Amino acid sequence: MTLMTLVIPDVLEATCATRQALERLASKWRVLVVYALLAGPQRHAELRRRLPGVSQKVLTQTLRAMEDDGLVARRVLKESAPRVVEYDLTALGKTLEAPLAAICAWAAQSGSAAGS
Image (cartoon, rainbow, N blue to C red):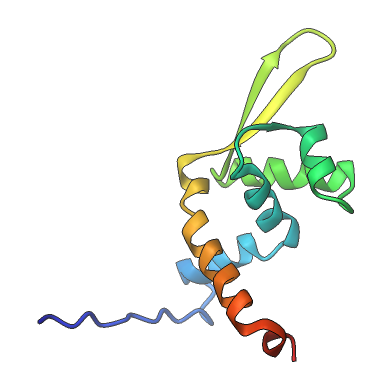
């Protein structure tokens, strides 16, 4: 039987890839956008309805940054006014489903103990 050694990165180092990924996902809206888009492609207005409390400006900034990071794809469905655009997770963005599901499972198991 082969034992796998867990490699723990030095997340305190600014150059650590894990730290950089955590910093990118640290925004509460980014994680919630990923959750919303796991259901499939959605337009800006649909995302705003699913994410109560996010302003139009913050959602637009979040989607643009996520697109720059390769997590979200923006697709123009209609060029003429009014322009119709939808957003979807890229293959890279979809890889976040399992880690986020693990966090949800941890939160459900931990219950109120996690908040104390």
